[in-house]
Length: 346
Image (cartoon, rainbow, N blue to C red):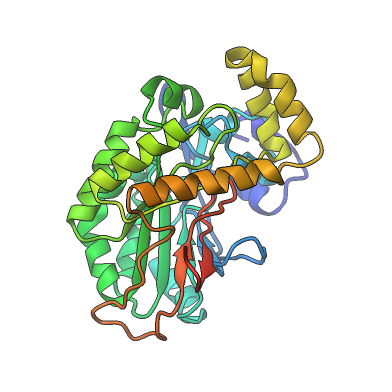
């Protein structure tokens, strides 16, 4: 085996494939590998989300967000140390012909979400370009419903490609901005692009005619949940040309708690007890607090003339079913791309 973290004689499946991956590049903090991939389109069976398929071009994410819910995905490869998720990045080997066959086997009305587990525009994208290769194939599709979420300004690179996709498909691009406070953003999302760069990406996409929204996800209790913080993000989003704004409260899977609670102990020790009490039995908060945040987001959105979800539109070359439903982003699973489909948008 190339690395001791892979040294296990009984590895099978994706763990075995990961162990056989050749090191392609190593930076001061991150190592890159390529990973053989059987499928790019993953079926989504959760009732919490409205999309049918998800695409994650990479495994692992360099941004190192303290709250990230996707760290558990590295456990499938027998990589269980929290830091390995952000330090060992696997780029999925792209096979255009195989991906086209996958698309042909899916109904066009079944929505596809890109970036549900790891960021499709993390730094690895500059080297491997897997996200762009996927988008180039989707640019030849018609009648699809496609959404994408990122917290990287690199997304603006593909504005022209998004234009092509949106002529024949319903496309919504969402950029995550949890706060405009650069100090706080650096604490929460250590290696993600600065908030100002993300706002600039929103502006670039909006000016290119792309339907773009901003997500303050996750809304972190007692840290980013104030009306002042949410209002500042919404104001910047509106000024940059975003059409929608919406987010949901932080949820903490066990893999997230192992990173987030020590982070609180170091930087926000006065909040540690309250988090332990509230997230002790479930990774999800509910009740009056979530109702309060939902109402707060609604007020902020209304104040700045933003919608709760992507615009209802029919593409120029649309060949799908009538677009009767919108995307409502009032509730989100942390930072996952999961707009709630609704015919009654507030």
